[in-house]
Amino acid sequence: MFLEIDHVELGYGARVVLADFSLRAGAGEAVVVRGGNGAGKSTLLRCVAGLHPAAAGTVRVGDRAVDETSPRFRRMVAALLDDGAWYPSLTVREHVELVRRVNTPAARPCPEPGELLDQLGLAPVADESPTRLSSGQRQRLALAMTFARPSELLLLDEPERHLDAAGRATAAALVGAYAAAGGTALVATHDPALGELGRSIELDRKRR
Image (cartoon, rainbow, N blue to C red; front, side, top):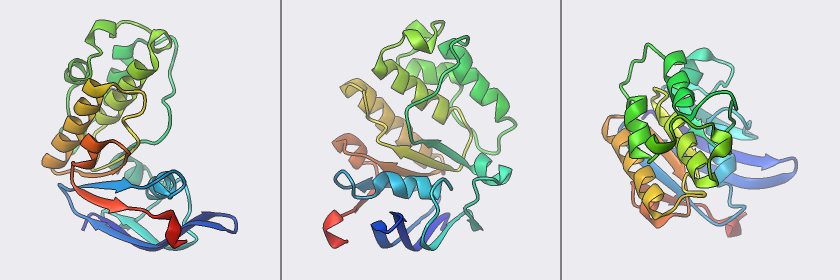
């Protein structure tokens, strides 16, 4: 198994949001995490990314403990967990190309920047600043930058936010292609199309 989550407990101080949670996912597998607001989806993804410590249990990626400070771990993981951050002096195209340039050479192939701009409908605005884009276009750019980064584990928290139907379909296709190429994907979503990508895990607030 590439991703192993064993009996994890997550919370904020005395408030537990996820208790005794376990999950295993192999290379080439997409796992969809579903549940209502406050069920712990975002917290779980942040824990796997090494950004939120578990109160109990363990998380291992590629047979190594999660460690956000480790360059090796960071090069294994591509994550879109929050709204993107932009450099106003760089164009849309330059943002995607920068991500690719600072993450080469890469052990795993991934889409080229130009291909991602075309797939995500960003080619017409490739020479614009992200500050001039709509919220949906900025989300497409955040996705392009995430998929431009070579990785073995993909973490996406509600990638459908701000996207229209065509954008959601494209996001689902990109995740499907990522898994088909041997990557492991963990996706928190409310979107039905993304929910059909692979094995589905439902988080239930009532059990806590």
